[in-house]
Image (cartoon, rainbow, N blue to C red; front, top):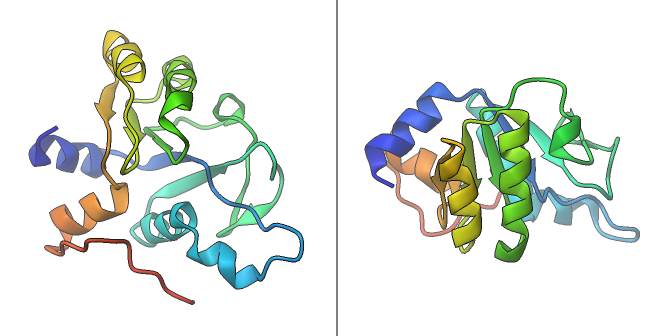
Length: 156
């Protein structure tokens, strides 16, 4: 997908359902959760005005970065522009089907994630399909003229 198309997606979107947010494990240092890639990306996108709904079936009801965790995107009660996936490629066709079902405009598969079946499901339903790209890095590149190799990890 071309930069102009990604810029349009990010400019016109307000709500992101982020699948694969990490929750705190028992006996885990709470600082570790803030360093997990999906959580870093969630906090970053929130800092630029996006509403990010964390999705994790094992953490339903927990509060992560100020948002209540939902167990499944089908249980989100507001419109979603982007379904952003931090899960293995083999799981993405199911997420594509759910993204279609809830009326999302975009299925975004994070860096290292791609799947032809998920792409076909998305495109057949007229969803925009982005794969193998980090939403945070794309935002930085297109709106901040910054081109980081990896997401910046912060301890705040």
